[in-house]
Image 1: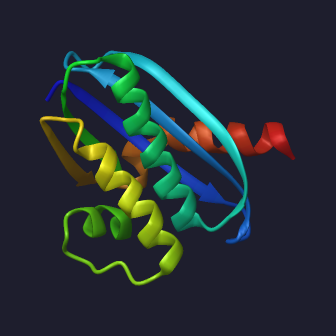
Image 2: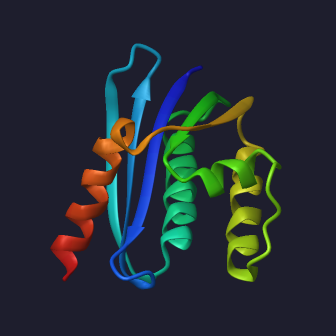
Amino acid sequence: MNLIINTDGGARGNPGPAGIGVVIRNAENQIIAEHKQYIGEATNNVAEYKALILALSEALAHSPTPLALEIRMDSELIVRQMQGRYKIKEPTLKLLAAEVLKLIKNFKHVAFSHVPREQNKEADKLVNEAIDAAI
């Protein structure tokens, strides 16, 4: 894989004040970029998708040539939806998923991995920093 990306999104209240976090690593596992953003009122799932969209957009910005990506998320729902294992029923999530699928076409290969929350602490920290700074 050319880039390893951890993403996280969360809302306090669900829906509630929400933030997203992205950590991008190179093949040597060195952090090359971190991004955090407050996204206003949202659900946890919307925040998770928006973090994924930000991650893919930032990966494109880091390299104009198509890359292989490994996306690591602690949202089993989003990972399974992106793998085609779960259907996307909620209309808002369908729209966000369509945006993700459009972005994915810019890369050679994108793999999604579900990771335990403990292995996603850096992205989670960014989510909380974004929400704390906004409220």
